Image (cartoon, rainbow, N blue to C red):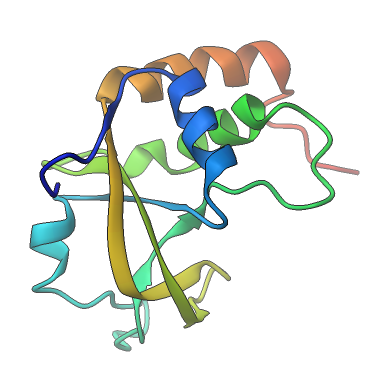
Length: 138
């Protein structure tokens, strides 16, 4: 992370930051320095994607719950990516397209903050408490 970038230690801190920025995304990777040297690739087709694969941390306009709930859900949906030296970090940038799972693909990336792994654990506890994991929407 760039010098001076915050290291977030709670879902509350994450939500506060998300509320102050126009659009912020999360990425699970080795970090901004490592991501400058790679391209995102669709694993099934092998196609190179036109930006880094990210997930939105800014709630959609239809979201009526607390920002903390959105942040917890987003972290939990992608926590399985936190393996092999990958950690969550926040970034901003310009959306250059959508990936095969409809995820935003970001270019002109600006690192915003790092997220402690304990925040993902806290997000999991919030997720289990306020959502119905596994509900199929029908």
